[in-house]
Length: 80
Image (tube, rainbow, N blue to C red; front, side, top):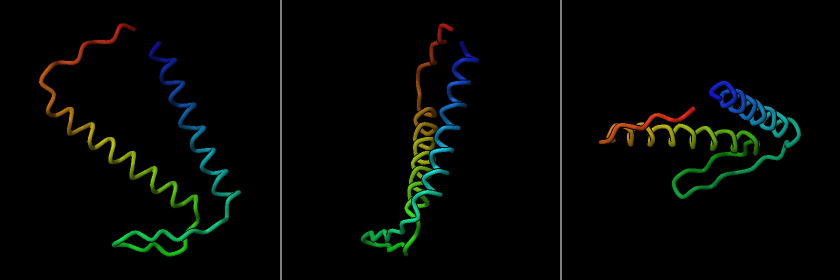
């Protein structure tokens, strides 16, 4: 069962990478991101999406790590 979970995760990650590459190659549109305190010059839409995804992954992992430090109970083992 563990091997199946890893295989599914590997396939899902590979699919995301392929979709990102296709989006990068097919979509040459440039966008300008104008935030209140920051204006990013014209950049490819796919680069903006990739950076946003990467920042979200790093933020999610950081929050999960901090939350796991404050865990008071031990996790129960999974029934594989």
